[in-house]
Length: 196
Image (cartoon, rainbow, N blue to C red; front, side):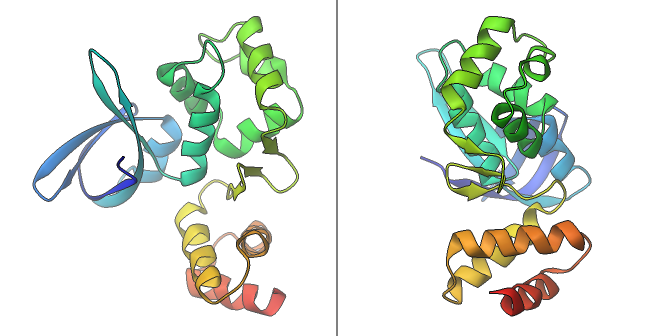
């Protein structure tokens, strides 16, 4: 299992990315959310999920671990395959998708191309207890607000290494970035240390 790939972004389109690592070019299927996160960047770190089928070996890439977790939750729903899950994540960013599931907003799901009423209902029923809207968490991982991904992830990792609990660190970092979205990682960590 490949956890992530870190390297030079050779090619980037709204649906695919080719990232070169150690002389090997990996083609990844991505969502529009991930495209936005990497657009204009020469290199990056992308989280990966492998789909191995009889006729294909596919890689799906995500800017955030939380987006990958949502992708896995979506594909666990009967009738939702990897491409449908990617379409949902392209239409609804992770934080918005969590809100849609938590509030049982069937209309928002059916507005996604290829999602009918029955599939939307199945997604809402199957995932209602697996995501929490209050702290924007999915599977125990906080979803930072759009645009805060790398800063939030780095700040939380640093706080955990300093001995603070991951959940408390994620909540502190989320609230700091919500009130001051332009802070650098160091400033976020300093503010979080005062809160924890």
